[in-house]
Each structure stands twice: as structure tokens, then as C-alpha cells.
Picture (cartoon, rainbow, N blue to C red):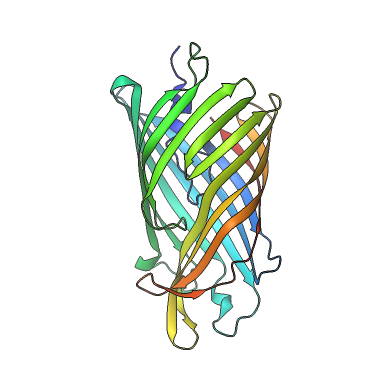
Length: 295
């Protein structure tokens, strides 16, 4: 049986924060919050995205176009060493351009280029420092939807780079999926891994671990300790937790997750990307809920 083409193609669409996005979302809106707890900072994010597939003339070759928008707020106690009013109202917008084509021996190639901007926009205008660039090159071999495969699997390997996902350096992209039981499946890799239990056709539970984060420009700069100027902020997270999914239909889903933050690094950086001030990183709870339409 031939593979469902759209399901295979959709794995090429990576989300802007590690965090975030499922690889086969056509549209999604969600809300994330890191409650302050015992820390000085509360983080919240509203995100909306969509992707549109376009079939090209060459057989089994597709182009994807999409937009990914986020509004991020950091609510913090007054800090005598800098003006915290500047660390709020971050706007992120990415243009997703993805291309995929079949290769030999059942493999596929996927290439994605994502220009965009990430900024607090306090100058009420965009400048060169607001521009961010992301990109991915991925090779995929998929046996997930073949009827003659008793334990469906999918392997994805490649390289991913993003200037606004909290880890501003190239990362390996590795994902091995396998359904080893009618009710159980797992995905092992970087930047995310999970173990999923299919309670029924409508209800699922998922244990997961993943990377998340954000990097954004500070347009007017922030004077720190009266001597240095911070020109960007970087937040990197390593987290794990439990996700519940309710499937209204095969393609429309509600999800809610609760995570424990194993590592949280928040730094103000100078123009050379050097860390000059570490912010309170004692948040331990990460919550997200949303609705998505997937292939």
C-alpha cells in the first residue's frame, strides 16, 4: 500500500521553539505559561501557526508555505540592576518555506528555510538586528503507514539551526518512531522523545521530554548594572512531563500538558552574544494547552 503522501510530507515542518510544534500541524493555536512560583519571573506565550501544502509538477514533490506567530511576555518583580519594562511584549513571526522530494530506496529529502523576526519592538519599527534565520535539512524513511508492516516505524535524521529557539547553534535532528503494540508507540530522538499510550480512538496519554526556548532582540538595549548594555535575551529549557490529547476527529485535537523543568537558563546578552546577566531561573512548572488541526 502506498504511503499517505501528506502525512509523510508534513513531518518536514518543524516548530519555532522547540517546543513546540508537532511536526504535522497544518494549523494550531496554544497558550503556554511558566508560573512564577518561588521565582521572580512569570513567562507566558500565545502562539498561532498555519502551513499550506502545494503540489509541484514533478511527481510526489511538494512545497509548503506557512506563518508562525508568537506573543511572549515576561512578568517580573522590579529589579534594581536594569529596567524590566523593556523585557516584555516580544513579537515573533516566522515565514516557513519547505520543500520535499523523493529519493532512492524509499528515502525522502526535506529542506526548510525560515526567515523571520524576533523583537520587543520598543522602537516601533523593525531593524536588521530583529531578523532571525532558521533552517533544516532532513532525510526520512517512513514505514508508518504500510499495511504489510507489523510494527510501523519511521526514521528521520538531519541538521537543524535556529536563531530564535533558545539554542542558537546547530542541533542534530534525530527521530525514530515505532509502534510496538496496538496501544503503545514511542519516539526517541533530539530535540524530543516520547512514549504514547492510545487509551481509545479519542483519548491518548503521552510521556515526553524535549527542548524549548526563545531568543529575541532588545531594540533600544537595556542598561545592566549601570555599565553594560544588553541587546538580546536568550531562554533555554529542558523539560519533561505528561500530555493528554482528545481527538474530536481524525484531524482535530485538543491537548493539555504539564511539565517539570529540569534546566532553565535565562540570560541577557551583549551585542557579541556574550552573557552579561543571568535572570532568576527557579521556575519548575511548565503548562500548555491548545487546539491543532493536523494531517
